[in-house]
Image (cartoon, rainbow, N blue to C red):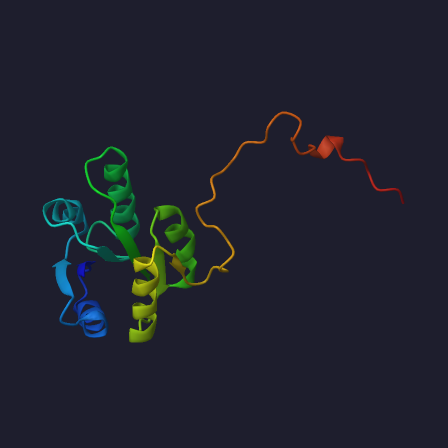
Length: 158
């Protein structure tokens, strides 16, 4: 497995490589978010692990840029696991197009579970119920399905 690790924090490199390293795993470390797409283009990894904050372009922007380039056939699809700083960042991760995310602090068991799930084509989304679909598109109501406006709601009898 080839993992592209996008972070500028040495401790994240240490933790991720220690948890996921092995004879069949190769790591490429990218310390600048703006360089991730070029690295993916030159040597496509099986997985990108993106830190939320990477120099001047963080993990959300990196993931969205990868998805944009993919949508116009500039890059192949690459699974992304984001490393979030706090639970409040889940809102951003849900909209980024990432296949999964973990909230720091990291540990080896959760990293392995996330990578295995994503490798099986599943999502790994901490802090969100498993049955919730984070990628559900916003759909406009069809004619006749509109919700009543406050003026149309009858006043309760009382």
